[in-house]
Image 1 (cartoon, rainbow, N blue to C red):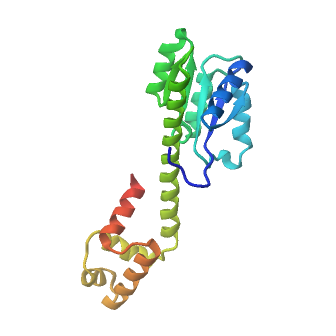
Image 2: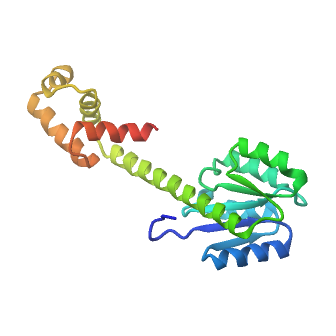
Image 3: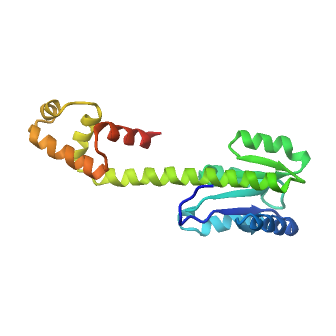
Amino acid sequence: MSTSASAIPTVYIVDDEDVLRDALAWLLRSRRLLSEGYASAEAFEAMLDARPGGALRDPCCLLLDVRMPGMSGLALFDRLIERGLIDLMPVIFLTGHADVPTAVAAVKRGAFDFVEKPFSDNALVDRVEQALARSAEVLERRRARQAIERRLAELTERERDVMRLVVEGRPNKLIADELDISVRTVEVHRARVFEKMDVKSAVELANLLRDLKD
C-alpha cells in the first residue's frame, strides 16, 4: 500500500462485542496496521464530531458491524453517506449470514465490501489493505485538487481572463484583440499564469484544469 511518508493509516472498528474488537485489533497489529475500536455507532460518530470540521486527514477504513444495540451499522453508514465520507473512509461491513442481502444492498450504495462471519483472517486483512489504498488515493486526489485551487486563487482577474483564452487555444494576438490590451501585456500575463499554476505549456495548463473538474 502506497501512502505519503507522514500518513498513518488507521482502521476503525465499530462492533459492540469486546472480544471481537480485541481480536480484530490483534489481527491488524500482526500486519502492522493501527486500529481504533468503538463499542457503538454513537461513540464512533462522537469521535468524528470532535474532530475540527469532522476532517479525516490520513488514510483510513471502517470495519462496521451490521447489527448493534442503539444505532445500527446501517444507520451509521447512512450518516457517513450524508457526511460525504465513504469515499475517504471505505466501509467494510462485518455481517452474519442472515444479514448478507442487507450488506449486498449497502455495497450497491457505496460500501467497499462485506465480510461474512466467521471470516478468513488473511482475506479480511487483504481487503482492509485494499480499502486503505483506496482511501490514500482519494486523499491524494483531494490534496492535489486543493493545491490547484490555491494556485487559482492567486491569479488576478486579468490573469484569469488570459488563462481562459490560452486554454481555448487562442494565440496571443487574438487574446490581445479580445481583451483590448497589447500583445506584450498578454505575454506578461501568460508568463505569470504559467508561473503561478506551475506549468510550462498551454496543454499542461489545460490538463491541470481538466483534472480539477474530474
